[in-house]
Length: 299
Image (cartoon, rainbow, N blue to C red; front, side, top):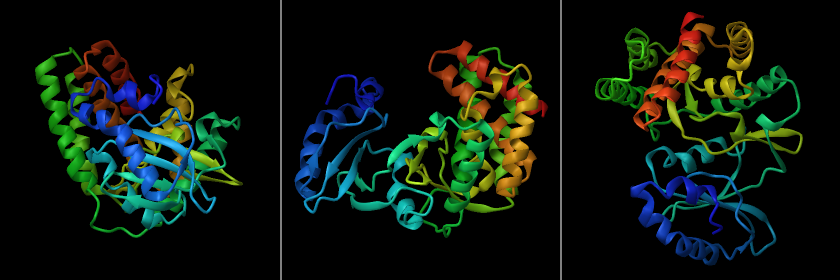
């Protein structure tokens, strides 16, 4: 439990996580003993979970993930079972009482965001992984995207009224409207990854697999935004609108989606993020994100 472990630094200030952090060493020991694991030092990843390589009694290498129980992570085991290694890391065992997963390791485990290939090639890789994930059957054991984004819309309105950050009220209202209305117009509903950023896509042999899902069921066009935003920063270019347009066109073609819906979800998610950042005390940071939302809305 090194002091700079992300799970400690991230959850340390969160009041609701204090009891779990206090009991984490005991959870680690219990999971180790339950599965007869030989643990290695924890990985410096996982802001809401303790993650470490380990070896099972028969010599099988695994990754142990013990998660802080919160809403977004509760569907992960069920989603991994449905994907069964197709596009996502394979689930070997699950301890539901301790919220612990044993996962097949990805080797070499390079993050897609750190891969040296050009951005367009990495976007194509991400699209291939998404297509495999979306091929899973849709079941009723997951949250509905529409329910989640309706809550976000209300929370965004409340934050705008409470904080009064001076943001463009028309743009914020448009983001709120999209959060409420986009799910109803979904052309294709799938089992979503929910947090498909390039740090959650790892190399595994000749292929790539997703990790750390926050699964929901809903519009496929919801999933691509973090990949589009983080494969590299499109807003750092001299003409971000041109870069975004080119990349959205690539994503829409590869994923067989309406480009306008990808952009609309991007606007909605940027507006929600801007007000979330402002609610955390960084009004200027939220304003920067809202500037990005304006560029997207102008597309």
